[in-house]
Length: 315
Image 1 (cartoon, helix red, strand yellow):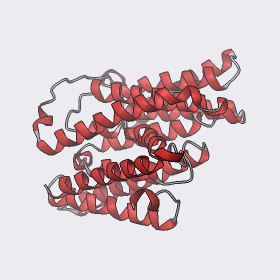
Image 2 (image 1 turned 180 degrees about the horizontal axis):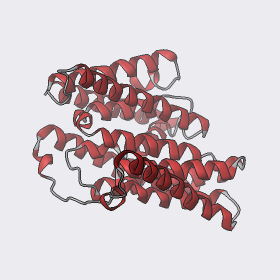
Image 3 (image 1 turned 135 degrees about the vertical axis):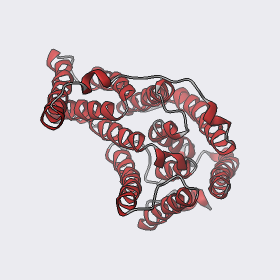
């Protein structure tokens, strides 16, 4: 049973999910989505695969460090299954990099409630978001989530709101210095702007359409269920639950407003969606008479995602 197997945190789970990611990588390779004809292309493609494995482990670390779910691997399971449904992400490495830096930023601001090293955590989160914006300009919207984190998890001191500005300035100075030394130019700043495209023609492909519909259904269903249950959470857990919800909404806007409409942009909301979905799957454990139905419903739901993922792999 999937819910029983991934309801525990065992080393074999991480090995298995890494293998699944590798199978997805091979599928993208055979479909011609990954250039693999020279040593440099092989190195780049291998690096992108390793970045996704790192993202998988990073997501698990963020979940455990902040107690966002129980002691299970549902979050990284869902994250992995959706990733292999989106082989086109290998054609958009900037999306992968941007997503990883947003995850690193989330790691920092979700730990603000511990009230330790607050200034450093805010600064680190701001730097990560600024770097993500260099890869995908609309990622700058993620500062909205950071400011909510400051409002909810810190005392309202002016310096906490100034620190993100300092972080952005440092990234700007380093980037400008690099281009001045390498290109002898400051033109990068004028080229770094958020270009939008609302041409969803790429979604006419059956595989992308199925994946986007499934992710959309998960967002609507899991998101609404999680939102309804936040008031019932212990007070110390509510702020991070709200932050995950705001992160999901913000990353959806980032994906919609961006200029990439190949399906690769769906990677952006996957990490908050994976956490919210894991919360749903693990809920109501030991809920008396409803437990059998609840268990089988979750089991069928997980198998549905697995089956769709396998079908899309071989399409």
